[in-house]
Image 1: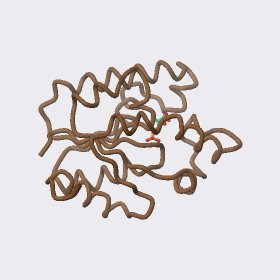
Image 2: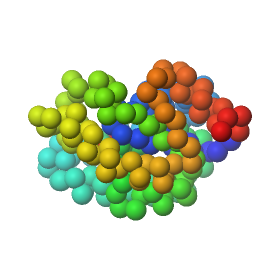
Image 3: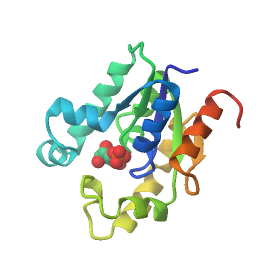
Length: 173
Ligand code: S3P
């Protein structure tokens, strides 16, 4: 099985919660890129965006990804939702491991994030509109970065984790 399994997808697509379950089931270490960057900077994602701007955050994501090129650990990597769409990170993701795109539709994403205040890009009046347009912009990046796609709209966290394990074992298409 691949040493680094990468979960990509829009905000609220379940990367962190699926990552937690998958890491437990496979005995891999869970690494969450947002948490890693927040810890390294000693600041929340909101404050990083506010104080340094989005591009600086994107550069931090790229530096973090590069650090994984030489890792020899078994890792489930839960990525930030914009990671595959900036700085040519898609190329790095391909080099680093096996990527699964957790696809979800705008209405499902909206239901999951509607009360969230920790995501700077969703601090807007029309959250659903923003989710719909940003997802449309990003969809191709996600698909191009992914080795496999799972439609998560009607699946629970456990089911998604089990499906990923089946994919990894080559039992599903
Ligand atoms: C972002 C997604 C967030 C976080 C930041 C930017 C994005 O991560 O990296 O707020 O551009 O989609 P989650 O996908 O874990 O919410």
